[in-house]
Length: 440
Image (cartoon, rainbow, N blue to C red; front, side, top):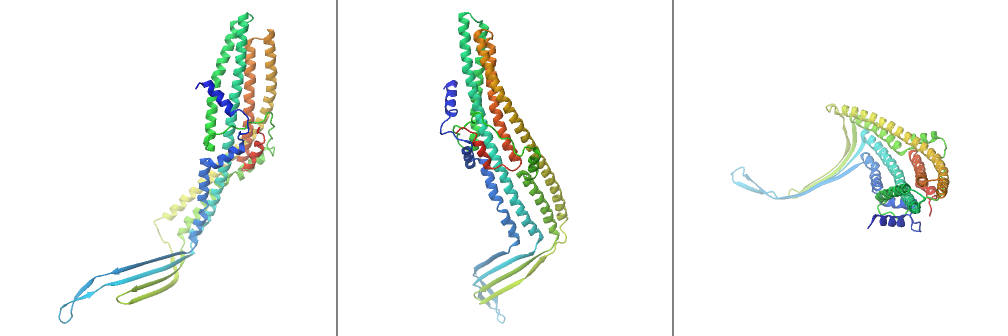
């Protein structure tokens, strides 16, 4: 299959607006069901939700049962006391024993700290999963708009190719009738060859962007609904950067998880220090022993308290405490680094969104001017006051402006999503206003 035919097929399949075009919400639902990274995060959450149960188990009683059932056979030979004659005794017997025991911690500070850590660990797992949910929204939206950007580039390049083809044909006709020089034809031919090369690059870029979207949604993407013409993108609210930065430093899920890691590190220090403390357990047991042959049966019930006082273990506990103190300091530094990164991301997204809105307005004005310039150059070319290269440059400027305009709109929308993600407030519902901007 020839390359131009591939371009036609791609254009007809992905750029034609029809009832089957998938919008952003539909693509996001596909990603929820099929994205491997999100599925991994969901499994990590399920694992993390077991932490409290495991931590609490150290404070609950331990009940165990053990026993044995054996049959013994044999004989023993001994000498008679008076005569010295051998006497053979049968030693066949059946022994059955079992014991049921219970141990309930009465004082174990290390187990208590482990329980407190487990609650923090589960909360950390939930915060990490919430961050994964926000990351999925951003990744899906970015992949979606990357495809739209590639489609716009291909559409613009193909439109420029059509216009350049017409200009090349016009230059050839004028040269044949002697109204223009061969230079105009060569310039038009060079512009046409360049736009053909750009078309091949645009086709390849579109295929790559669709493959990237397929990685996220787990299936070949359908045609995507594009942005409506002349959409208005809402500015960030609140309009100042300080509330966004404040929210990022306290509510960003990565910051929340890092803060919980600091608390876990504090508990780890206490848990290791608890190894210096005594422990006490309530113990109870019931046992039964029976043996045939001798006819003996023993039943025993016991209840009491066991205790243990650590005295010396080769400085291992002291060393472990020093290690956990250093790890707590590391966790604090990690928290500060995460907080600063969240603040920077919020600031960059806020500035990027405001800059993008201004850029969109400027490019919308530039598009109008470029269209007027192209029409003027076409008219001037027809009456002989403009040369062919002027028309080609005007066409190139118009299509370049249109591509920049669509890219600026997509980038502004993405900066809005990143701003909410940095502030820890991004939710699925935030996709609805964006989806309303699409042409369904």
